[in-house]
Amino acid sequence: MKIALLKPNDAYGISIQTQNLADALQELPDTEVEIFSLAVGRQPTAYYIELGAKLNAPEIDVIHLSHEYSFYGGVLPKESGFWDLRYLLKKPVVLTAYNLAPMEMLLAVFNKSMAQRLKDAVHFRTKATRDAVEIAPFATAYTIVSTNNERKILIERGAKPEYVTVIPDGIPIQSALFSAECAELTAEFMDKDCFIPPVFTWRNRAALAYALAAGYPILVSTTPETQEIWSRRECLELYNGNNDREFERKCTELTANKERQTALSVQARRYAERYPFSRIAVLTRRAYVAAISVF
Image (cartoon, rainbow, N blue to C red; front, side, top):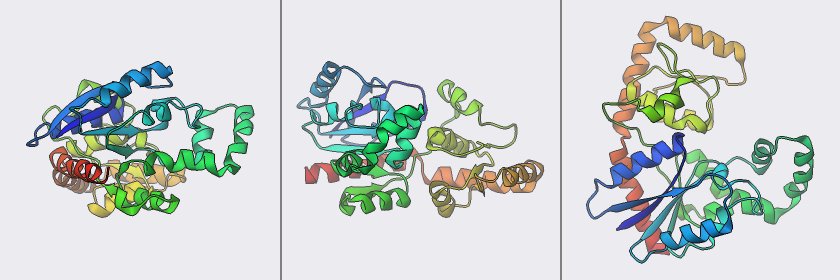
């Protein structure tokens, strides 16, 4: 099996995680991976035509895309290069969904000015546009999400359950845990003793993976995603991200409690041992087989 793996050409978390997955996939028998670089942001149509031709090469068996709206330059179909590329693909497509936020939230992030937000508000009432943003990218591929909560969201929006699978984020197990690429990514979140991002978002999900691999005690805001990680193994100290006082209290308590730090550190390493990229690669390859079987 030969996989075309599309990797964003930036140095942030998804790019790092994609490379880690590619390296693990290459270790599997009868599996070949060719990485294709995706220029982040809206590109000319000719760029997607050229990229699509490469991805549709006869030797490619399945195409694996990462879906984050910023990769393609916008949220609405007319602004995004995603559909320019997606319509061209003639192979089975597996898509890893990194952002399932409602359209209102996505537009608020991408369109900073109030005037633009008011202009876009009309789209909230257009079902076709909402569906094109919130479900169509994921319902037109065999989709991977990292938590059961995300799977539930997609099914509620209309995705077929048999085409949405949960594969946890892989944890890198290697000697040089904090590579040059990850040093910048994690620097703004790393405390001397603990890994404490003030508010957890999936922008720093790779940083969290590296912190787990390194065995850091981790204090992180409560979200459906972090709660699910905690449910797999109690490797996180959670706090209410909307409560600054609770954050300050928990931060003070954790940094002063060496026994609690040690317990979290042990659980973090055990979580990392349970979800290494070698295991995630096996699960991902099964998703490729499933995508090919229903193409």
